[in-house]
Image (cartoon, rainbow, N blue to C red; front, side, top):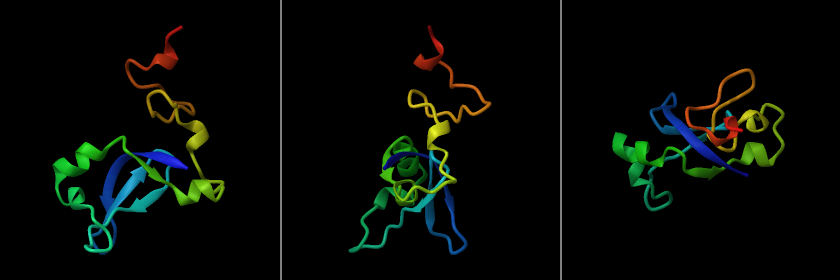
Length: 93
């Protein structure tokens, strides 16, 4: 299942990890020639990738901790007891 990137953080060894809208995490390493992700090396590159979908193996496997059912498909906000993001079409009506 494809889930949008909502942020980034580093793991314990300094590798970049994408934070996904479902609450799961996925490494996004740049280790040529096996993994080509030069964009992860700069703040600008990571910023440009926010909202980009990645395959989430944990969601695909049916992880019960998945937040996907709590995420608004329109704005990406976690809406379980929270608010939609400003301008979200799901709040008009």
